[in-house]
Structure formats: C-alpha cells, structure tokens
Image 1 (cartoon, rainbow, N blue to C red):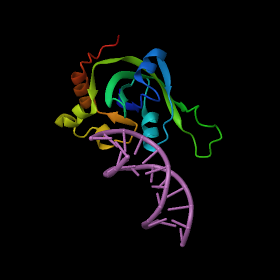
Image 2 (tube, rainbow, N blue to C red):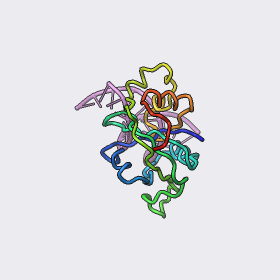
Image 3 (cartoon, rainbow, N blue to C red):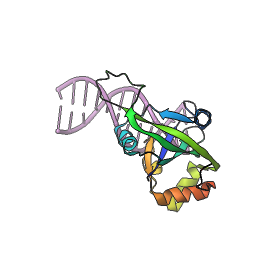
Image 4 (cartoon, helix red, strand yellow):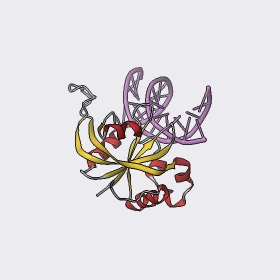
Length: 144
DNA sequence: GCCAACGTTGGC
DNA sequence: GCCAACGTTGGC
C-alpha cells in the first residue's frame, strides 16, 4: 500500500466536484515524472487531494479505484505517445484542511515531495509523512 | 503581477 | 549534443 498526493486547481476540478461525482478519472497529467507516479499506483492506494493555487491546502482523501489506463482526453493518434490516467474515488474530507504554509513550517515535513518539487502534480508520500499529515488534519484513518 | 523552477523547443 | 529562448506551473 502506497500513499500519494495529487494536485488540482479548484477552478479546473475541485474536491467538491470529486465528492459529487464519487469516482472520477484523474486526467490531464502531461509530465513524465507525474506519469511514472500514476503508473505506480495500485488499486486501493490512498492519496491526499490538494487544492493548488486557490486554497493551497489538502482538503480530502481519495483512493485509487482503477489502475493506469490511456488518458481519454488525449487524442488516440497523438504522436507524442501515450499519456495515462487513473480513476480516483472520494474517501472523505479532511476534517481540518492542512495548508501548505503549515506543512512548510513543520520540520517533520521538510523533505516532503510537495515542497521540494512544487511543480510536480502527482507525488509520492511516505507512510511517516502520511500519518503525520493525517494527525494535523484530524483524519481518523477509517473509511466512512 | 511578479518571479523561481523547470520542461520543451529549435538553432547551431 | 549544447544552450538560449520561451512557455507553464504554482507560490507569494
């Protein structure tokens, strides 16, 4: 079981939309490192849902509902090769959203990939960091 | 609105 | 294969 963090600008796709839709394809990743991370996701892996730009905080938890498959938002004949997506299912809202500023200020999270590689939209999270952030956010760890 | 970080493109 | 120019992301 691995942990991840995925970013979305709420203008484009928000946590509220994720909750409303339940399960939703996580499309639009156009970066090779992010693609590798998507490809490494396994069914049932959990990910923090982070609002970039507006909010700049972790607002919820999603789980991988379907492993990597071709991203339907890219043309099938795209000569650049195959981009991929996964399906994400909303698990629950973070009781107390964890802001970027709080994570940056926390020495325990100094080497978080979110901070070290701020432009990467799909990043791994270690189990230590996962548990630490869950404590900050008041996440019980249980599924609703 | 600005800027840093980084990826991509194209000339050579 | 190198590197400058440019575009994009995302924080501030």
